[in-house]
Length: 48
Ligand SMILES: [Zn+2]
Image (cartoon, rainbow, N blue to C red; front, side, top):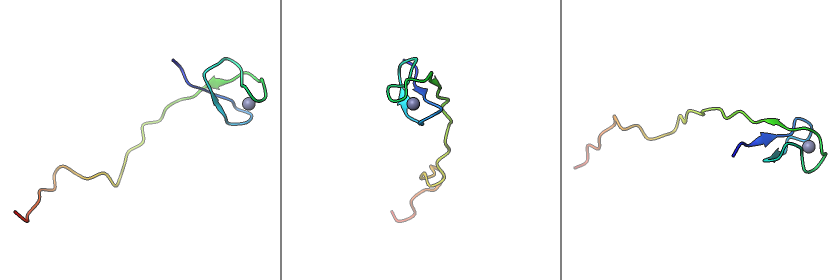
């Protein structure tokens, strides 16, 4: 299942054409987002 995105109205769709404006949708490219605030596993708890 490929997620597509309409370039006109920025709505996501799974179909070839947008549901809203009926224009041809483009493939939405997923970007891997690095989470900065993720808890690092390197930090070990000192309060034992
Ligand atoms: Zn659209």
